[in-house]
Length: 160
Image (cartoon, rainbow, N blue to C red; front, side, top):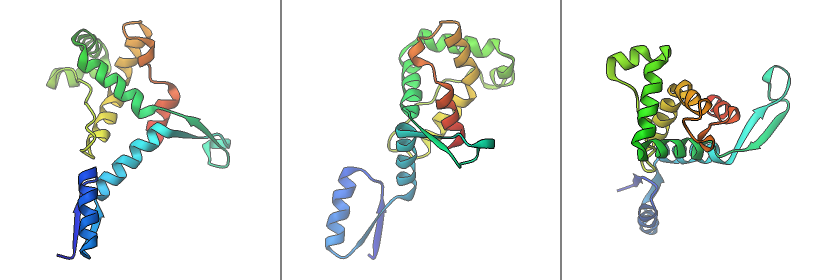
């Protein structure tokens, strides 16, 4: 055996260190590394271009908890059947969602899973889709203000 690639859990890291002692190359899974770096970037800093025409000549750095905020929303809906019902009702009453509701019914926010690299993208994609319904619920005080995703956080997701 020349090399081995695994995910990046701590037990696999320890296993990889043992392999390297035996002159077997140990590689981290690129998908997992990219996944964790993207999640880290979403939660650390948001880079907002402030130059003319949105160019990168001047960049404002804002602290963000973008991924954490979305994850908090998802966990809230997953733990409250009443909130999830309100989200479904909001989707049913908004024209944008008519086709989706008719075909498969209202969507439920997707949960992020730490060890699955593709799930963060799916969670963010779903939240983007539900953006209008979420904003309606926050504006109508049907959801706590702490669940509001700020304009800067939406922009951070859009730019990344």
